[in-house]
Image (cartoon, rainbow, N blue to C red; front, side, top):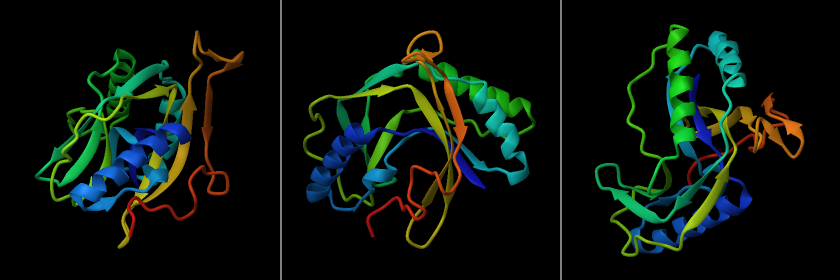
Length: 202
């Protein structure tokens, strides 16, 4: 199973990011990522034996993400990968701490963890011809209180994403609106993503 951990935006942030993608596409060309699949990759876990999935889920269950805010205020372009992306000027300590904990604990179970630089971003376009001329759209605020585990399946039409688990933290002391932190596995029937959800516009 090809797995990754990610921050998944709510409808409002998702819609705004998609607007940025559509606007950039008119100038840069390429392929627009679908709004429903826009995300910020926390850690790419590569291929994971399905038999080890319970170990990973248990690790997630005991590793909350303290709520924080990300402000996206600029666009960028990787010419070698031809990707237009949205970025934030800084990385919250809570995000770095949770990422480091997840990776170190996963490594401690015997899993292979590839050293990865962490540059938080949301990819908007693939196969883009150039960078957007306007690299500084109005700031976009994203309030984050959790992360997800996603199964990515390669297909001729692009990656197919399936949400496997979510962990949402409370705003204070592990509480959110009087409720404890929430962790749950997501069955195919209850997934927040459609059964067929591809990452790009065909």
